[in-house]
Image 1 (cartoon, rainbow, N blue to C red):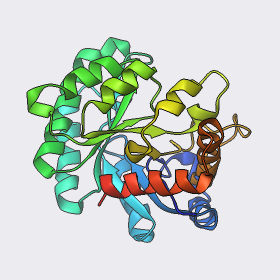
Image 2 (image 1 turned 180 degrees about the horizontal axis):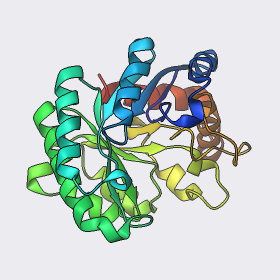
Image 3 (image 1 turned 135 degrees about the vertical axis):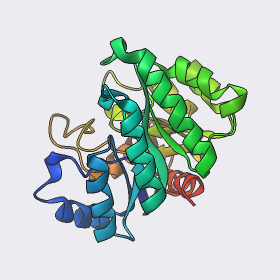
Image 4 (image 1 turned 90 degrees about the vertical axis):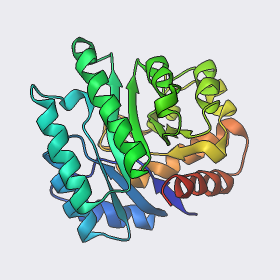
Length: 255
């Protein structure tokens, strides 16, 4: 089977000593491609370095995460955009809005988010969207005329069936499904059953959101098949079909 991990932070310190081994182990597990989203103007250089070392396996996304916004976010954005233009990327990310951990900075987050949505339009790149307790706010933004053509993923989707249906009414959006799908109190089975697999991509968000039965340990791209197996069980479908359709969706998003 052929899997794609569309969101893994291998630049994280959790992988400092063994990221090469992790990438090789992922290959052995059938995870042939991994997208590495940067979170700020510092770790983007680590992302690019890893992708340079593994050019046929790892692909860079560059962006400013809502939790990484500093006092001089304009300078942060300038540095990231300069690097984006110099080095290229497969996507803009990780970007978005977070009202769970960072509610006090939502006003600044909104400014930064809109600026990076503009990048998505200008560079014709998909966006990887962090939407923690902000799915409706994010969807409202993407329904605006100026951003209606932006393509992207609602990363680590945590919403209801109603929010899923709203997202799917935007033809340019996909949803990212990861470890939450395996948690007892994570994504509800009715959401997993309602997924359009042609517009769903798999992800780990490594080193976070480790799927059951390894929850509490470091997550890694080689756990992607566990997410696929969970979808197969809930939906009553062959795991091979899950791998095929979600990988095709990822290739459509990142041609």
